[in-house]
Length: 328
Ligand SMILES: [Ca+2]
Image (cartoon, rainbow, N blue to C red; front, side):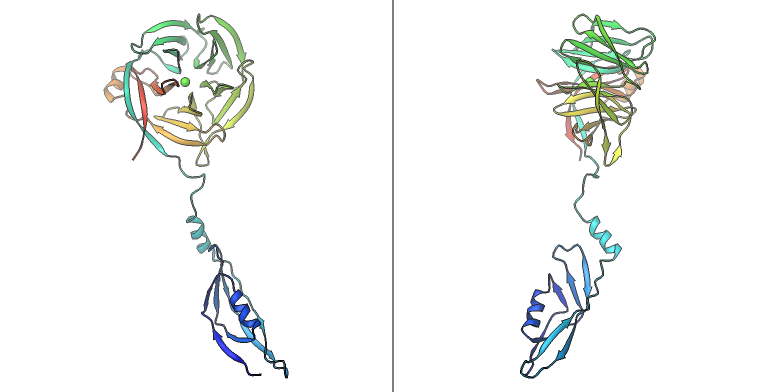
């Protein structure tokens, strides 16, 4: 039986080689140059060389072609693979977006207040201040910055963050390893609680008290017992974010001042990942900064009813209501 006409194949096959095998099964001679087989996903490349051998021409049986494929498969070269991987969609390691701001209102702020904690509730600001011998908790009138009510902490204590849970104002101290509970109306002491390590910032999510300690960890406390329940590590683009300071719960996110920077981290409380940065550089003018000998940005309060964001800093003469703006 005469051989069937040869079928010439392109030296390059995209996809699998099912068509080639069909030609072999139909006893047609196949001329194969070295072929390039490319996986449909385009991730791996293989170079293949197929040799078609005519093994027998048994009488009456026609031409039997058996393809012995000597397949030399070589995974794509490391450099090509690396290039492919680099072209894949970005993953969680992508740098979080940076937001700018717009000043909605500017209010007076006590330039003697070394702000450590800031909370908005019922039309007033509640603020805690630090430094030994100068630490206070105060109720402040928003529009005037006037201190309406104040309690001093013992001189040995360095006050840090505060939050308000029901009718209790809860505060922590820097290195004394204990916090305090005041009646939010009278500022009378009610209780004291202990914790290991340092205390920096405080807020709550409606179910748990959230506390920062200067590291990349957030602690979650039982609001009734103030005992620690769990911790969450905070990271951005795969790297730990330390120096988490004053905190605020804003629409399902934890916002944290990063100490000694003009930045606030927006933290996903489920994963600990920073989903965005708020860059507040330039918020306090150079002249205001000089006149008041202002220290770093610190202090975030949120009014959920009217979605107002308030920020200030240590020894800042002003407190700002801001709105976030995407940065070009
Ligand atoms: Ca706060």
